[in-house]
Image (cartoon, rainbow, N blue to C red):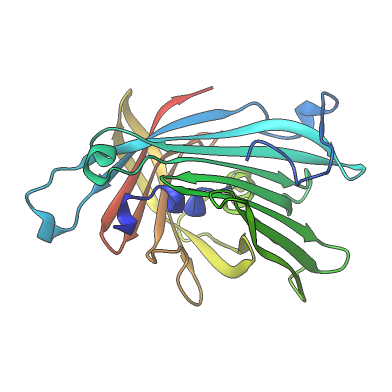
Length: 275
């Protein structure tokens, strides 16, 4: 079943591998790190699947773990960029039930001032499925270039190598959008709209602050803002559904937990550790 795949967790929180766009050199820079919030932040989430009501005989199952990290600033095409990484792997009862092992890794490069996405690189390892997907977002020409390689094939096979024109000048991947949103002063009914890019698919997405809540976490009760996110037209994620996230009420606005409604139940992410 598609629900056993963790890739869509990235598409909503995240997303997308531990290298830059193929053939382009990236070097870490240590200057001006204090100018950008959250640099060095590392968030680890426990992922759980809550089955739909007609699977009443199944409890909530451990599905795996996801790690989000704003690594720091790098040099990319003679400019500075923020390097954001996301890793997801399956474990526990879900692997035993589905027989599918998942090890996905994503890297995004974003402009430090606007958080507009410059590139996305995805290394997909889902059972026998092995893909490398690299995307460049070219603001100057309003184009994107995507290259997808099937690395499970022998020999490897290029499935897509295309350039798309007339894209918006600034697009955000889900993680750069989240970091940008966290710098906003929040209040009830506040909303913000993003042009969200997932590979070569681009959608307009609105996030709305619904209300303040007190929730139970692994370290006790926490005051949070509950935010709901949905696409203005069409499905937001591959499996459809809406995405909710709970940000801490303090100045850091740490993502404490998130929830996604999908065709087969719900996916929960709960913060285990942060640094």
